[in-house]
Length: 383
Ligand code: MTE
Ligand code: MO
Image (cartoon, rainbow, N blue to C red; front, top):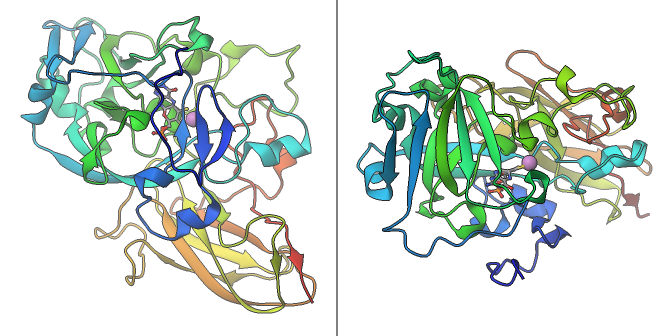
């Protein structure tokens, strides 16, 4: 079958779907290091993993509304300045399983680990687009191009066997400060097959779905990409919309991720003892907004304490400081004294003072995307 040549994966991953392969690490793997090891980075696919055998022969084309369409080989990308950008990638479906408990949603179930933080190495898309004559900070080309469409090599059933596609605005693609990459490295190693070998897009601060793996082409187009994953998926509908009254054209494709926060030190259904316990987890926002603070409660949200935050181990995190990674998550921790009955809750605030919704019901949507409600792990206190 098409799935006969899948790469091998770490046995500790929780498999949410086998074909296509979708898996996430245990919660504890996310807080054991600021940079998520490749083996423990979630894997989100919509088809079999493509095989690029001869990287010397591999190329992708840049075409569309530009004057000088070109085929680019890996050596053309490697000749450009290399950037290492630490960026958190999070699937819009992260925490979908919990949203489904409120009322059924459609989609692959995910616990809280469809997220990871990696150092992506590659060329800036803004530099690549200069090779085809598009200057930095261009929002429309002379021939009317306004969006950059990434097309993959893979084959997805949602696209009737065609490739996975997504687009971003040209202004973002040609802004060097937006740090959009064509990446060939992950955590200092060559990208592996699961994560897009030999070349993938990385769009920091934006839902994972726009970071297209296994690039085959980049098209400069006038309207945003019309593919399934831009137009018929990865949109957020109000709780009133169901599968009978849905009109996909009424909503925009999701881009920037809202503020998110998850406790990773407690697995659901585990048992803890009353007394001093360290609560830790991750918090992240989209659009390059940092995390202003993380609040933790042990009485279901009546009283709160502020957690300490860090990126690099041992150095406190300061939002918006030049030494902080603006596209990356922060890890947080706080010591609490667990009473005999407790409900632990965490929530974050980003640098634009955006807060998370208290309940999943207020943001419930039929595709189960963007569950950023207050995280309340459930476990037993063992006396
Ligand atoms: N790119 C291709 N070609 N095919 C895909 O199925 N999945 C997207 C995105 N890029 C996908 C893709 C989604 S929904 C997410 S969340 C991220 O890749 C996941 O990237 P990862 O598997 O490297 O963690
Ligand atoms: Mo995703």
